[in-house]
Picture 1 (cartoon, rainbow, N blue to C red):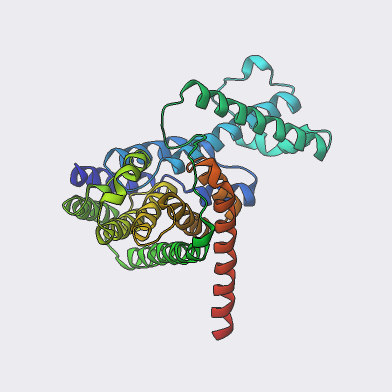
Picture 2 (tube, rainbow, N blue to C red):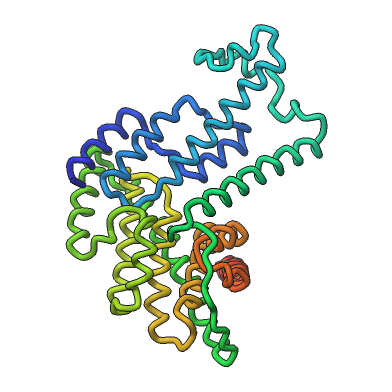
Length: 346
């Protein structure tokens, strides 16, 4: 399945371009231009779905970010047209053809608000609606899943507190390894001057071969994390590390060769494998060891400790929220110190 899909992905890349856009690319577009070009949403959706269906080690967050931000921009453009254009009324809301020149002449969406306070209140209300909606979903569907409010009794053994530095350092190191592999994957992919069709097909072959070692090379791991956590401590530490390395390389090399998508879920899965491996050697609770490892690793990879904490609090037991928050910020501080040290030496 991976090989023919790789060929299809390569053809689409050659015809449509490198899609889906990453979260970073979307944020950069919004920061520089104040918007995202939502007219190409179908390209991100098409290539994103095919890469996911083919078993690529990438997550859906890239495509969903493009679609979500695109819909918001689309809605904002319609509201601006209705507010400032005499030719536009509510009955034209669903019109598909909109002049780009006309949109450029209109004031920005922020001008619809009377003040910055008005704008902030509006954003806060929208966020609260989202939070309430998520809470309702978690309440209506309480079955175990990846995200939600999870509870677990935590045995706080303070006499073993000195051991927490180990998963913190290991998690930070693995996060740096993930970024290193990402950097070098992009570098080598750029140096290989062959058709994107061949690149994507080659990765399809490699991905198929990696499944001979572990099936965890496939997919983002989003729906595999929960069952994986339940059996991780029965897997040998060495093989857990092999899984983590394969997942990392599968994600980054595949992305560089055209199998694009989100990297958050694969990085979380790989970090969980690392945390479970070292948990077998430490006297602290395995769930705490995994939480510290994953928090440190993802904080390094994302570069945003607060976002990391919010994300992982919905993934790990809520009782570990303080541990997650502290670990994420400590890893971020360690990263800053490391970069400063290297700059001084260079």
